[in-house]
Image 1: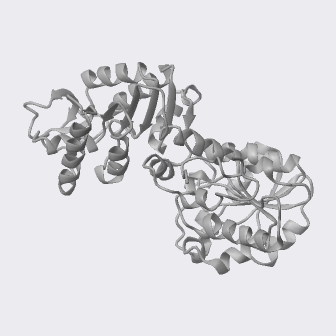
Image 2: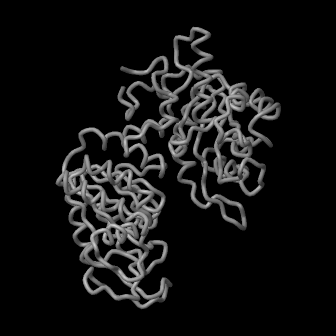
Image 3: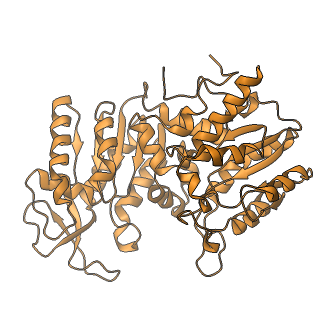
Length: 418
């Protein structure tokens, strides 16, 4: 079975929604201002609006559910979804009701009395340890609230949690026992677009297909690096992970950040690239400081004669020129991870140049990972790429070719297209 597309997964348009209680798993794990509690980035809330609006227009009673942060299975007011509900109300024009809990009589009563211009946003699922434990008993309590299930939370699709895996599984079992001939679980519009777009990278993407992978740790990205070596025409490496790769080639970069225990992993990937004859490009020059601070004095250094006290903080201009040219000329590009310490303005140029090259590319451009998307947003270029994924870890695992529990729980449901 092809586990990388939504071909055998019904979407929300296949559901009979009118008058039904619809549980929509959304990803409202958004950043909050530590002082005011207000939402500081509503991208994920906006991304879920088309699915919510479709359900409302079709006459459904909508129950939204999400996690927020890491409250470790305990009620923690810092992770309440109340401010998220307030922002959703502003964006949607709906009255958003947030009960004190996600299970029990409170949510049941709110759902029962829902009026046309109202939705329920359940309180943080992770206030209960059973959510992350994928507990069937907890899922049954959630199932008591609804008739239908929609997963639009791609950012959580790689987690086998109760609201992601157990709940749709239980609803499918319930439907099978009742002899239902129409689906009761489905993908939302965002989930379908995420899976189909990212899956296109695993099939026959237009070539040349260029992958740009950055970030701090080889250990976080080695899976996707090795998977892409079997699919792309060239792989461009940036960020601190590049220094571990350069170390694997015997190149010393002073005091730059290197994962000494991952050098062997990097060497294995380099060997695999050579065997498969896929160019794996590493930075040839670097922006270098002696201390990582905003007003640090910078210099550009190559791989040879790198200063012993130097710390590489970004790709250098020659590397940026080369990467930019490859990206601009590609037919398909996948980008995940910054080229340097882009959070600090003096060290953001490499990341910004990749972002601008991606926006200028006339091919299919797919971006995953919060830092890469943040760079696009900062430059006002988020709308200039084909797809900006809302799921960091989920997007990487899908591109690696892994099965995602939240996707598999929907697969093969009644009514899926062939």
